[in-house]
Image (cartoon, rainbow, N blue to C red):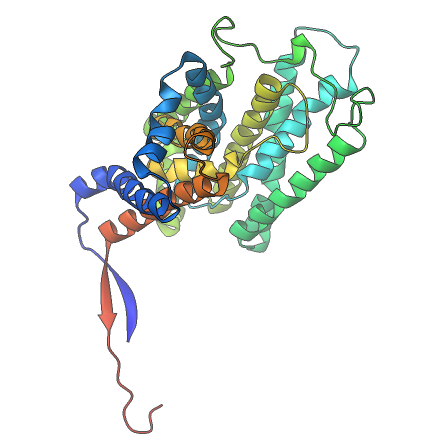
Length: 361
């Protein structure tokens, strides 16, 4: 006996629309069971995850801080995945973008100019794009699996950041802590409402990027090219589109947004470079993209939902005493149910029974 997936002749549009909501409901049910098995009160745990972070103004600012990089990275991944290019290394591109943008305030410490911050943002986007160009090159010209190469490059980027923070870029006046000098005011992304919280302009950049990417996908020839090549490479060739050029475009676009998210996080939320600058934004953004059904505008809402699990996970560690690992499992359950619902909407499961006769074996 073997299990096969048979594509349905016509998938249900209603279930296709409701798939993210169904996946979220199933994740909540599975999370409830998980919390009960861990000996925690499920109602208290879910309240800590989804209600407590919305009750205070300061926590809403923290929610925006965490949603910004998730949305921006997910927007790039939506475009990349719809072109049938699987960039799994956004976490590494996020890291290299932070490193590239931080070069200016760390190395040119005596340069105080209004141009510092714009150049940092540009350098971050360029750094992320160049790092994403490595798996693009390997796929386009050597037919290498981009999932493996982009993922492995994440760990190289993280080790490089760790080496810089503990070595060449460590603050000599930092009492031996592994971090760079604090960025000066002209290298810091300003807060939107400084009197009420820390939320900075990174969330604005993310929402603008989502709107522009949605407009590109819906109303431009490039968006049509992405859709056609993503659905059928052969049809795209008949239309005169190049799959190799699309590999480059998908990776450079998603890498640039991931790099911009990286430098926005460092200059807006942290204020210096250190070994750990991300709780896994690049990986969680994959969940955001699929929960949004690869729609850049949908990434705004799903980005806030996943940011809520980050903030709620921190609150849940205090009141019900749930570990950070359990919060990560909860995020993984969400991705699992999103992919499962999409698969079962488009395919039906068949059990195939085969018998071996005589000496045919």
